[in-house]
Image 1 (cartoon, rainbow, N blue to C red):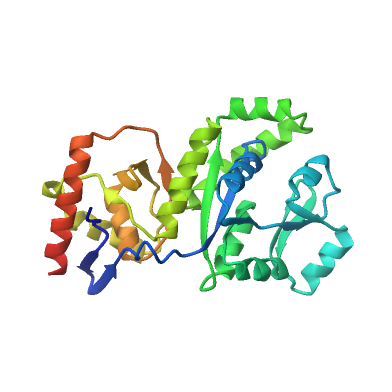
Image 2 (image 1 turned 45 degrees about the horizontal axis):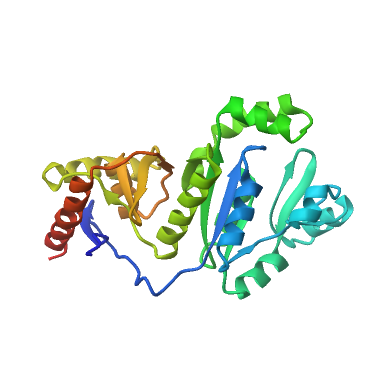
Length: 301
């Protein structure tokens, strides 16, 4: 099968070429999983670690008193608030944030040891932690952000079932956090644990091989003018709205916001991808492989 992941496009005197990596050349990355309290981050991560031996959990330091779930999952190094603040003062943290009154952050020593493992890393981190990690690890390790979301009513039930305190406060924070989720690379509605795990494993495959999405669009409707329009927006420093994607047969299809997605690739900027559940027309999908492969050959010459 030919993968249409080559694009040569001249816009505003910029010539950009994008290519899919050899599938044998896996690029290890850190996958940041974030979302509101109660959305199921740790449950999903634990299941993924069991199913994927080439992944390693990246632990954090926290000033939170040790809890029963810390003993079970061992996701954190529990230290005193004074010790945490000493690490801040001595610049020994990659990132840190205050969550529900407690410090949480990734130590530089932890990330350095983890990178040496040669494995891909996975970690639950706050919104600020994701932003800081992406900036500070630039050039060292690829950072992919995955936001897990859930309906507010369902989230309240989950918090109640686990005996969470201050539910009203957490739901108030949820409303604020929902406005920040679009800075992430992917958004997944965690309405079904097994479905979410399956989707995340598809994201791992796409990201490890640096594969790009296939526009679910007939070549006959393709327009350079529309890409140029979004390119102008990016040149003015504007952030592009999210696009919608579907995973099928090992590929990611862009089904909404196609020109925004292409503009993001051309300008090498991140764009949020909302994963939706929908079955694509099999006949049309097969035709896209041929259409886009031929079209990109014409563009490249």
